[in-house]
Structure formats: structure tokens, C-alpha cells
Image (cartoon, rainbow, N blue to C red; front, side, top):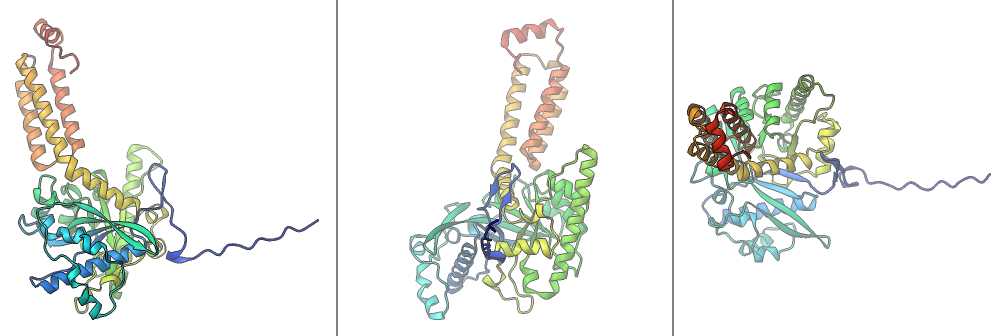
Amino acid sequence: MTKRKKQPRKKLLRGSRGGRHRTVTADGNINNNCRCDLFVELPKSTTTTTSNTERHLIVNELRQRLQTIGYTHMALTHVIYGRPNAEQDTATRAIPTSLVVRNNQTAAIKSKPVSSSTSRKRKLDDYDDHDDDDNEVPSSSIDCSNDGKSQTIHVLRRLHSVVESVSDVATFTTTNETLQGYDLVSLGPTNDVTFQAACRDATAASIVTLDYTQRGLKLPFSIKSNDVQTLQGRGGSFEICMAPALLTLKHRKSLIHACREVLLACQQSSSSTTKTTKTTSSSPARILLSSGRRTNSVDGTDMGILALRTPGDLMNLAKVIMGFPDGIANTCMSTTPMYAIQHSKQQTVGGRETSIIASVDVRSRIQILQEGGIVSSTQKTVGSFLQRQDSDRIIGVSSTRAEESIGDGIKEIDDNYDDDDPSNKDEMDDDGFIAM
């Protein structure tokens, strides 16, 4: 017998520079392209022209770094405390268009690291320091060159608020016009009351950030399974920022404790959901990883690109160090962030308009019924239904809840309608309301 020669095994690169991580989406498709960092803090600026130019340079360096290590989406984040200011915290003023969209001069600049102060000074004139507040560009794509291959990174606008009271959380609804220009809105609760309100009432916030740097090893609030179910039910996601733990040694234990706490709450939530629905399969919790705030805890300086890590490194940390299961670790940088982006678009763009249009449609239908005399005996029911619709539209309910309310209202009218009444039968035959 002739022995078969052993073929040499191919050497595979280990670590973050190895093969592509294959991410399985909810519908079974494999998505290898999306890598998102949804918390790139906007550099602070003052009124001087030099600092504005430095701000543009820092953003450009962060963008080039993220594009080089394989990210496809980044969100420039404007951080505030409390409720947003209608004048200062608008999207085009907080994050100018010149930071989101590069003009023709900056598009010609190749992505090269700035190594010396002289080269930095030469590039000062290449950046446009004027903020175009009139042009609203919620997101854009930026073409960069890397090793001869053209790649694209999408820049988004995000508003992150650190909330300390329930009254501040109540302002983050889909009817708030100040939030309409942002692609993403997130909240950072600081106590139990604000955490519960953020999961339940903040309809405009698609992300709830778990800040583990405030209170030692534990989070400043307790995560309960009911809060997880509420947030997951309205389409929200949890976020854990990695930069504080990577830059500061004392925050690393806090990161591990926070991950264990949120995983335990998610497991309890999924188990309780399985018992109530009597099903054996449950969807994994939506947890995404981002870079977060890059401030050094010692001197308060911005660490810049030193706080950024490759998607492969963060996914490995999620599996090995943070204890995430494969279903969460494989989607924390791709599928879950993209779901948060799409959900935020539906909330800020489609949710409010859909509820208003639906309410107008029901009003027109009820008005026709009233003119035909069909609902003359149910004026009280119609009035209460319209009043409930107005209250839901004011507080900013989602389109799904609005559609459910519409169905309930029409059902109430149909139940109160008497088919045996000959006058109603004549009206139905003449005006043709059978389809309703």
C-alpha cells in the first residue's frame, strides 16, 4: 500500500488580523462587512480658531484609524448632561457638517498619520473651519484609500445624555424636535429610577449605556429582568464602553462585574419569557460594544487613537474575559449595532409621522361614520377613543402601539353597531361602508 502524503497545513493568522469573523444574522444570512463603533466621543473645542482646526484633525485621525482597522460605521457622539438644549444641542450645531462630510480639499488628502508638528501646521489650511448649520446631513459615507483599495466608512451623528432625574428622561421622546437631526440617541442613567425610566419611557433613545466607572465594582443601579424585557420589547439595546477599562486599570474589574450583571439579568429575562410563552427558543439579548469616552482619569487628556481597538480584539475580549456567549459576542460589533441604527431611523423618521397619519386616517373615517348617522349612539365611545389617540400622539408612542389603538377603536365602533337596525342597513347599502 502506498501511503498518502500528508499535505502541509495552511498557516492561519491568529488574533485580530486573522480571517474575517462570520456573523450570522437573525434571518440566517452571514454578514461579514459591518463593523460599528457607535460611541466615538466628539473632541471638545473652544472659541479659538486653532482649537477648531485641531478638532478637525483629531476627528480625521480617529476616522482614519477606524477605517484602517476594519470599521464600516462610526458615530460621532455629542455628550450632554440632562435634557437637551434647543439652541445648543441641535445636530448641525453640536456636530457640524464639516466634521461629518469632508469637502473637496480634504477628500484629496490621503490617510497618513501626522507625525510631526510641522506637517500638522501645513495641513491646517486644508480643513474648513466654517460650520454649515443650514445643511442637515444626518449621515454620510467617506471614501478613503488603504493599500490601493477603496473603502467606505459611514459617519453618523449621535447624542448621548447622562441623566440624573426622571424629568430629564421624559424629554427623550420621538416628538422632541431637537433630537430629529441625530441618527442615534442614547441615555446613560446614574441611578435606579433613571435606569427604569430610560428602559420604559425614553422612546427616542435606542441605546442605554451601562456606565461602570461611577461606583466602584458595581453599577450605580440594579438591572432587573423586567427592565430588560421592557427595553428589548421596545427595540432598545444595552451598550458597554471598552475604552475606560482599557485606559484605566481600576475600571477593569468593574467592567467584568457589569458584564456578569447584565448577562444574569438577560438570562432571567429570557427564561421568564420562555415560561410565559411556553416556547423553547429565545432570542439573545442585544448588547453592543463601543469605544466610549477616551478621557484619561489621571490628567483628563484625550487619549485619541490609543483608546481604539480592532473589532476582532473586542470580540475576543467579549468571549474570553467578559464571558459573553457566542450568540452575543459574534453580534456585538455588527448585527446589534446595525439593528440599533435601523431602529433609531424608524423611531425618529417613521414612528412619529406614522402615528400622526394613522390618527388622521381614523378621524376621517369616524367623521364619515358620524355624517352617515351610524355612530350616533356611540358618541361617548368615539370621543374617548379620539382623546386617547391625542394623548398617545403627544407622549410619542411608537407606530405599533398607535396601530393597536386604531384597531381597538374601530373594533369598539363595530361592536356598538347594530346590524338589525333598518336605518343603519340603508346607510350601509347607500354609502358603501361594508369594507370598513
